[in-house]
Length: 409
Ligand SMILES: C[S@@+](CC[C@H](N)C(=O)[O-])C[C@H]1O[C@@H](n2cnc3c(N)ncnc32)[C@H](O)[C@@H]1O
Image 1 (tube, rainbow, N blue to C red):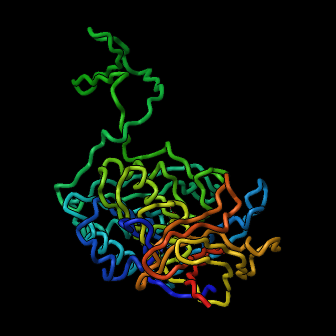
Image 2 (spheres, rainbow, N blue to C red):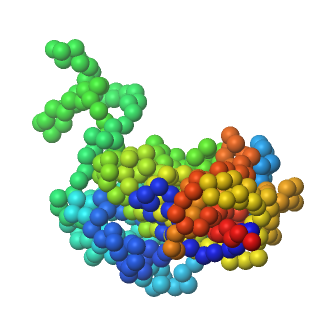
Image 3 (cartoon, rainbow, N blue to C red):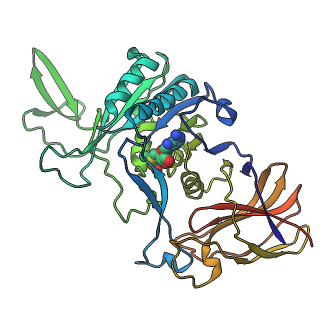
């Protein structure tokens, strides 16, 4: 029979990437302290002192993936700090940690909005040094409502600071797609090699712009929109940022194999971008929902997850035929007030992994998840013989994780 057990880590593959449920603003300690001076980029997209609570939408069971089926909402995190002082202490902690985690060529990207960017700029000037300021990027978008009593607030601010003057930044890694700009005020011509260009004379100087020369972004980005409601990239996490944005931030700064750390990782967008760029990653978030959303989004085969298990009365039932044998799940019935009417008890199961408990870690052998293409969850596997006790970890449809070890009766 299956018996609940608490583990400190869940490890897939060598566990070289990390998702850590922790306060990213607390003085560096434990696993995170081991990454001091290691990161090539630290990205932080903290709460913006909105006073709101945010949710994650989750599909429920096999039928939940059918088009048009509503996805229930579950709490993800609260952006409530009580006082400005407590918010500023939080922001300071994050920036100080970023400063400690970056290597000598590294860069911090701090993502804020109109509520907090002034504080962020002053804190970064103090902690990194004014001379290491690189950019105040304006990410401008159209989505959201329109104000009537002032101009609509339609941008976020991303502050870039270098750790030292020897920072790495290669703008050539982010060429813009060419669009036809009509430069009517410029003289058009073709040079002796047949290359078309526009030219303008100003202040006694001649400026020539070749049509085929690469164009790079400035510090105002208007070409990346927020994710649309039905965007396939969406995880259901309320404040998820677009991948395109994170790729533009990371690409000039990181190379293959570098380490990217996100101290407020949410749905894991920066980690997904780091994965695309063949970088290693550490994602930290104080909300278990964020860690588990990131884990299922990344489906990384080389990952350690440190996130508390839920302790409750939920029972896992099944059969294990013994070493190197079959593991079959037959019953799982988690409860949550937001769960829709249950068609099958197994609908409350969103994903599961089979593996072994070694010490205080769960070592994953294989993982099964519902996906848009395959909403039906396989319920059995052959678990190869391995060191430790056979075990299963589950994530339920409300995003809660539990681990069970198999005990022979
Ligand atoms: C704006 S969201 C990040 C969204 C993320 N960039 C994405 O694309 O999904 C802010 C995140 O900060 C997390 N957070 C809040 N307080 C935190 C803390 N003290 N330490 C770490 N994470 C924290 C929240 O749980 C939330 O997931």
